[in-house]
Amino acid sequence: GRPGATSPLPEKPAEQAAAEEELLTRLVALNAERAAEEARGQIRWLRPDYQNPGAPSTAPDASGEDKDEFAIAGTAAVAEAPAGKQAWPKSMREQVAAVRAALAAGPLSHEAIAARFKRRPAAPVLAVLDALEALGMVSREGADWRL
Figure 1 (cartoon, helix red, strand yellow):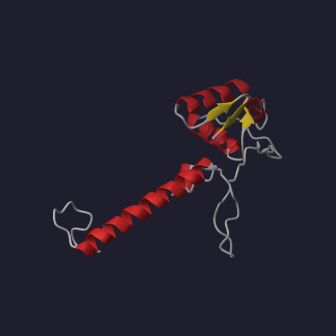
Figure 2 (tube, rainbow, N blue to C red):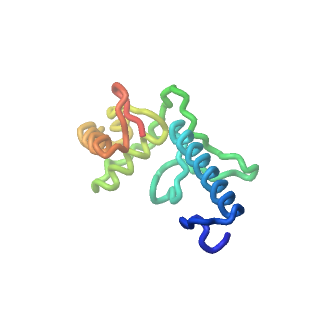
Figure 3 (cartoon, rainbow, N blue to C red):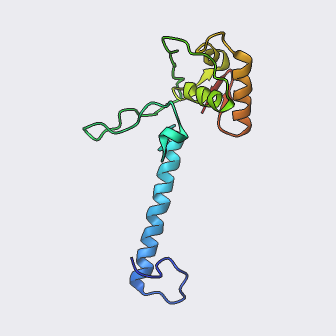
């Protein structure tokens, strides 16, 4: 790059103006591609261990292909409960992470999420879902919830 690139100079050399225009064109195209991927349910987390704990790994395998595509084409994905039910977390942070991890596989009802835990905590699960909905992190579609 050149010093002063993308700075508002009144008289830019034609080469710099063309480079800036190309940069902006690529950036707009990349943003449109990201928005389309997110609409399909594929989110490219910068720090997946922190931003989306408990989600399946999306690291590329040896062939360079993604192991897990998040393509949801209008059909509800059926998420299976883990073999051994876990206890409902005590802290709100862990409860939110557990609910988001359950919804990562696809839309589920609050009863289906509660069934993944010992003692089926339906009311606390619904409270977490309502809070996440108020924050815009989940949405309700009939009886099902989705990220």
